[in-house]
Image 1 (cartoon, helix red, strand yellow):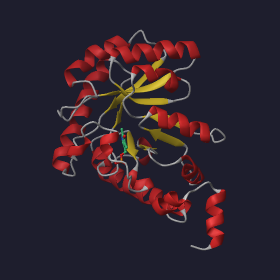
Image 2: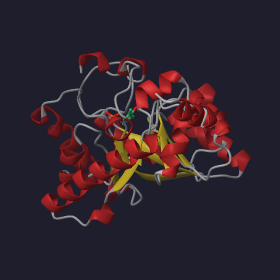
Image 3: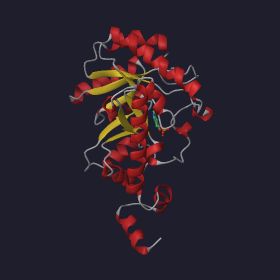
Image 4: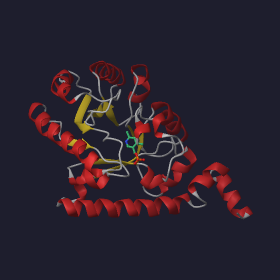
Amino acid sequence: MSLVSDELHETAGLNAEDVRRFGPDPLGLFGRNLAAVEERIERACARAGRARETVRLLPITKTVPAPVLRFAYQAGIRAFGENKIQEAVSKRADLADLAIDWSIVGHLQTNKVKYLTRFAREFHALDSVRLAEMLNARLEREDRSLDVYVQVNTSGEESKYGLQPDGLLPFLESLGPLSRLRPRGLMTLAVFSTDLEKVRPCFERLRELRDTAVRHNAAITELSMGMSNDFEEAIVQGADVVRVGEAIFGKRSTPDGHYWPDATKR
Ligand SMILES: *Cc1c(COP(=O)(O)O)cnc(C)c1O
């Protein structure tokens, strides 16, 4: 690597590890990856007979360091999805000068509620009444509101996170009085498999649950489902939001078990 580019990287706040992971030109890399993801979304929409505008891409930025995320912003990304609240809080502080919409897509402990309600626009992992009530109370104090997706466990896997499907309707009832939460839809993590025959039933299940839920709560319209390896199938099954990390930012070195309790089965 030339001295000049070393200097440029230093100016951008990139360290040697960042350059190893994202290459000498993160802006170019993210631009190319985004274009490839966009093409995959368009093809899936065409296959499903859906208009492109009906699918929203939510880039998942976990493990990508803040200085590197400045290149993602430059590449046109304005919505950043993070799994862990601590990581989001720290990056948000580092990127305070950028107009970013932050989403939290991973499990939230009730003692971390106050960090999320200060700045997040969306939360995709709502899965308990207690959490919903605490979020609502805190939002009340901050005079803010929050878009929420209710996480449902559609894989039948022994996972700590997500409501069991038969608990969904009573749960939606309990959201009724919580006026600071704006329910948008349902979210799921499909079974951890590269076999679409195993993944598809999870997406179908979430769609069926939404079709029932929307009759009880008219706000439950959207499906947040599909990740780098399976978002085309999710789109065919009706996804409104696809959460895509590695296809945009490259492979993560942190094992997914750090983010999902049962990811080791993948
Ligand atoms: C990391 C993550 C994603 C994105 O996964 P990729 O395989 O990197 O696309 C989606 N949803 C959640 C909840 C995540 O934590």
